Length: 332
Image (cartoon, rainbow, N blue to C red; front, side):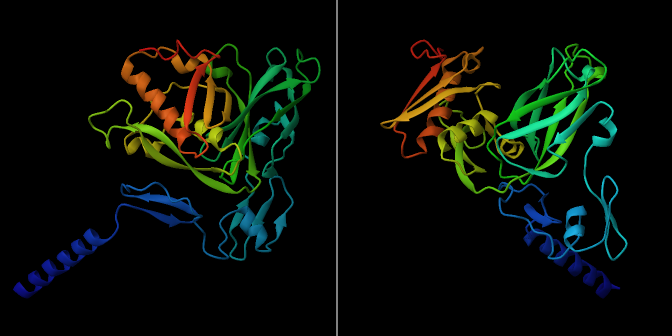
């Protein structure tokens, strides 16, 4: 009996040791996605998380494997094991009596500039317009625009519309186009939207840094002490502007968990950025200083912007302005 009890204790110790020594807090690649395991200290890996070679996991891989496709709508593909995969078209069929998009079609590969064409019933518009958003697969805004009616919109019939979006393609492969019913009442029951899944044309990527305060790395919180975190973006020649755009997005969910925080308001827009002779002149809209008070916060805002720009060798000095004003901005 004692031997059995001793053996059980040994087994428990071995299991505990394996669990202790294994990397519980890590990112695990499963079915083409990085899955958080425990509470990893590192950010989600940026390298591609592959499926097993030849593995069928959606309509596209079923089609690429040479399996037969049923020409229904949406299309359907059945693999050799009898599994059925349906092409993702989001809520297109559900909304077809209200709004229809002719270009781009679901799962179409898109580039910038993107011309969107379709038709919607008059009730989808307000004053002949409605908003459109292009999002990446994490619902980050890639571009926004206003679709305009190409005819009399005060009707219950379908009215043609167009809108052009210009954007920097994200590193994500998949995204979605969201066409939003204009709702001046603001009442939730009047909300409606059509979602069109799209694929971004492959782009080269690059790593840049953005700077935030961090209450874990700096628990005493020195106002102008900011810390870098890396972002992967689509490769661009306008890298300084792209870095600032990332800064204005604020910390990601993972970055917030790691203590990163921003002192910059939401909805701040870059109006102009010029870099000449080592001096970066950056002009923002008035939202940068909206309800901003206290020397500490002002110092933090300036430090975030300045450090983010000075990571580039072409920038030695940063001049910040708001609607062209320099002297009286960001006062304590």
